[in-house]
Length: 289
Image: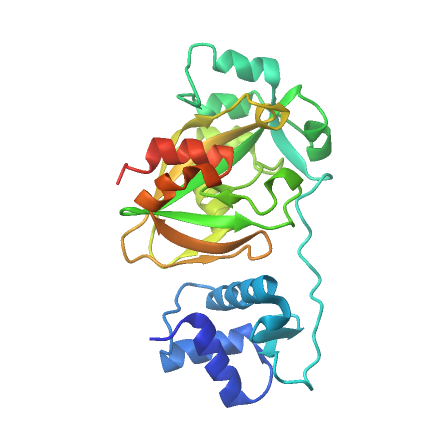
């Protein structure tokens, strides 16, 4: 069975014209050229082709000729289309934070770097401010749902791109997925366990799609104090356990590239190449399965 990219190339050659990702996904599934499933398979196709274009540029076998429309780069009569990029969750975003003094009060009886903290209480004492205001001050700690994804003896890793607002993380090798908790995530409802589970799944599914159902478990709060950037961010850590044959696709190709499972032993051996949060998570959970 071919890869999704190889299948897409074959279908485009057969059609001899640009095709929408929906058309490509339908042909892939009907011809069974590659494994493709889920409720929105065209998003998987879009993500895979987009990631290839971002990674290889003019050396990619594909090019975008319209919104969601793809062609083979060798077709010189098919003009490139500069897609309007999804707006980044940037400085004007309103996010959930906790005052640093209140946050540190939660950690007084804990030893780090991953703390056994009731996330529901932590979220409830938070407030909503602009991301820029939070980044400009050490008076607040930003809450970041953070996911460590594994298959048996494997860890999912990726490389961050330059589209991430924090320049210090550009091209960093990472083993954690996630993003800021936004103001429209109704903190008052987090006391409802089912609501919070749905929230966690939604946050995860904004970045990754899975061929199977992940098992998600809350582990604690990740918090480091090495520099100002670390003191301004706290991770709500969740482990995501997948079956050995589960396939994943990145839905954020503009934010991370080279998404792949690596052996746990290799990741541990190369731990120093990862960002600081990933290093903590690798130490804590690399051997759990």
